Each structure stands twice: as C-alpha cells, then as structure tokens.
Image 1: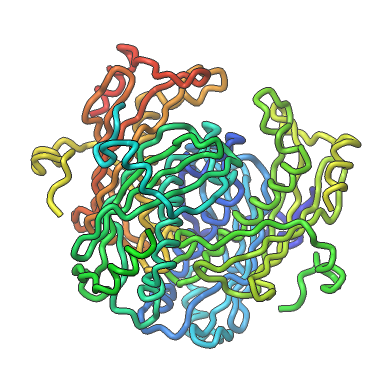
Image 2 (image 1 turned 90 degrees about the horizontal axis):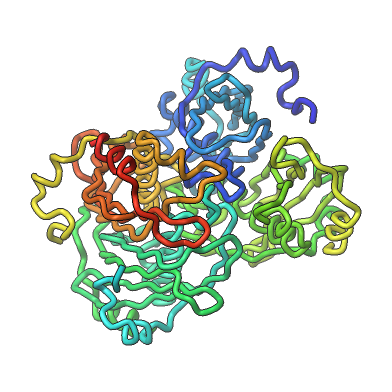
Length: 150
Length: 150
Length: 150
Length: 150
C-alpha cells in the first residue's frame, strides 16, 4: 500500500524513535477474528503518549483539579502493517515530530518481539483551555520539557 | 450451578423487572473465543444503571461540576448463563432490589431476542462525598425518585 | 485546522451520507478529562461499518466458521471536531467512498442531536485470505451488494 | 461493609497469594468521575487469570485452532475497597481456591504500590466443549499443571 505520507524516508523516520512503552496484548483486546481488534491500537498510542507527557511533567499540570488547561486529540491515524495476536509483547515507540504553537504532532511505531513492524501512526494533540476550548500556546518551559525527552 | 443466592425464587425475582435498555453486541466486544468477552457484561450493567439514575434525576446531580457527591460501585457480580455473540440484540433489565441508607442494591437480568436468559447480576452502589470518600445518606427526595421509576 | 484532505468539498462530501447508526455515549467510554475518550471514536466507526457489511450480507460470509476470507482494517483516521460527553446521542454516518479491487475506502461522519459535526474519519478495509493473509478480490456480487446500500 | 463471604479469615486468605501480574492504570480506563471505571477490574482479573493458564500450558490448548475445548467464565465478582486512579501501578494477585471436576474457583486481590488493598474478587471458570457447550472434566495432568503454579 506504499509508505504513509507522514513517514517519508522509512530509515530516517525509524531511527528517531527512542521513547517507548512495553505492553502485552490482553485477551479482552482481541476480537472474534482471533486477532487484536483495530480499535486498541489507539489505546496503546494513548498509553505511551501520556507516559511521555507524564515524564515531561505536563500531564500532572493538566490533571491538577484547579488546572485551566488540558490536552485533546485533534486527529489520529493508524496504519496496520501486520496482524497482532493475544499475548504478544509489543514495544510502542513514539516521538514528537513537530512542536507547533499550541500543538504537537506525535508519531508512533509498534514492533513485536521479533522486531517486526506491526503498526505505525501519527496524530496531533492540542493544549486547550478547559473553559473556552480555545488552544493555549506552549510555554518555553513546556517545549523544553518535551525536547529534553527525545 | 444452581440459582444464585440473590435471586431466591426465580419467578418472583424475574417478574419485578420493568426498567430496561436495549443494546447490540459490538464486534469490538467479542474476543478470540468468538463470543462476547465476559468483561463487557459490566459495561452493559453500568449503561442501564446510569440510564436509570439519569431518568431519576440523580446522575445529573453527581455529574454537576460543583457537586459534592458522586456514586461509586461497592461490589459487582455477574452470572453467565448463556454465551452471547456478535450482533445479538439484548434487553438489559435492572431493578433496585433494596434501598439502604446511602446505598442501593441493584439487580440485573439480560435476555436475548428469543427471551432466553443470558446473564444475571447484582451489585451495590453507594453515594459518597467527593472530598472525604465517606458515604452520604440518600435524601427522602432521592429515595422517592428511585422508587417512582419502578 | 483546515478541512482534511479526504473530504475535499465539505458540502459535496456531506450530502453523500445516508447509511447510519445511532449510539449513546456510555459512561465507561468517558475518561478523567470528563469527555468521550478519543479511542472510542474507532469503536463507533467499526460498529456502523460492520452493520453496513452485515446488511450487505458480507459480514455473515466472513464470520462463517469455514470461511476462507475475512476483512481487516488497513488504516484508520479520525478528526476530532467537537468534544463529546456522557449520554450524548450520536448519529454515526458512513459511506463507501471508493471500492478497489479487494479493498474499500470508508468515510465516516458523526453528528450530535443538534446536527453539529463532532467527528469525521476515513479508513480502508481489505478482504484477505485467512490462511495466507493475501488480499482477495471482491466478486461482482460483493460490489453490487455494497453499491446497493448507498 | 464487612468481609466478603469468599474471604473468610482475611489473614489466612491473603497469605496464599503468590502468582501475580503488574499493570498500570491507563487513561482510557478512567471515567468522568476521575477514577478507574469499575468495569476494568474484570479486565485486570482476566489478564492475570489467562497469564496463569498460559504458564500452566492450558491456554495454548484452548486456543489451538483445532481445539475441541475452551474455557468460559461461569460467574465473576468484585469488591471495590479503595478508589484507583490514572497511572497507579497495581499488583494483580490470583490463586485457584478450589479445583472442581471441570471448573476452578479463582480468587483475586489487587494491591497498589503502598501495599493497600484496592480490589478483591472471585469467580468460577469452566472448561467446556466448543461444540456442545457441555462441561469437560479436567485431566489429572491439567490439575497437576494448575497445582504446580501455586
């Protein structure tokens, strides 16, 4: 099906990933076709993304009871390369491909234990005001926190 | 396996149900054994329970941003009588079997379109303080709202 | 954020939708930010897509125990336009934008009860061999079944 | 609320657990009340249970394409002791409290990183015939495999 447009040169794209999370496919995440249901790819993507934002100290700010800001997903995309099955151990890689004014473009790569590519993906997240829903620019400190992790 | 202890006399137990919700089994709710994954029974139970509390006007109180109270599940039980499959239409019945001081014992019965019993269940919910986590007694109005629906 | 590339002219794109499913946001589909968790968009997309393939008589073929073919998702995309909350009633529209040799490009549009656009999306599905994983061309009858529903 | 009847003497009950799984609460597992949604307790229970049956070599038999047997849940129960939140690390303990003719009664205990009890539970699983749905007795080897793990 060709390389997705967000990837460009695969070798270049792939070598930038360092941050990752490990997960194991749960039985409740499979479906009657016997494989991982497609919807759970996005569960894995969210898990590693929020782990990243937690390590960056941003998730704590958004979750604070009196916080005026939060993070929302603007779009999400997944390309399914290889079927995944119950009990497979997966490495869920992510990187921030671009930091915008109030958004960040996050890329994802999922490999199985044999190092085979199973899923790739991307999606933008945006920092918004809880009250108005308008986007809220990153501070310099926010950007530094994101950059320092990759 | 015998009748669960919360049921007692089946005929008596069954005839008390009137409040219900319809649902259709999603493919993402099945698992690699080809049937509805057991964990989704509790998703169906919660759906009809909160529909009930919404119709009673209580859910709105708990969800209000400045609400000091909320509802939590104290325990949940499900008995699996008959396997359920993708695309089955189910009626999810519930009744409040007993209203306590700050809790309610909710019973569940799930039937398929042929009227066959697929699942039964029960579980207590408790109204608590968001701040302290302590139980908060129902008002007379709360009790009336629950009783008026069944 | 501009109109996603799969939409092109919004007015043209929107008027082609006729097949849809209704759903109501479950509490278990919300998250600690108080809104519908982004991952459930894909659950809704799958639900309406398989409802379509069931009405077309294809899902039954894929699910038959001795079936040699099945359907898989090749890619999935969602654009999040408007936050969605517990208990909202949604109309999940879909259409087959293009039928390929063994694939179909499916588009999605989710509206709330006020007719406001909440989510749009697209994704390709491919008919494959259960044994080899290779793509299997649609028959003329398959294509006719899909075309007859929209 | 008193000790659930399946526990009996807490100290005795608790000291029998040795098999466990670690998990971290995902954001998509929380709900709009800000805590772990009650339905996910059963996802955690299933995860550790099937990990046990995999280590015992039984899950592989049930999942084999030509297998005539499978495992189903007969009933499930959870007692919610302490609210759990996003990103908490949990230890999900399980033990087989009793092996029947074709069933097993599984007990569960979930502790957070401070060693506090958050959830307890129990539920019976039954080995059945895929074709008839009737229960299928454990072999001596099956029982030995289960006993050897605890």
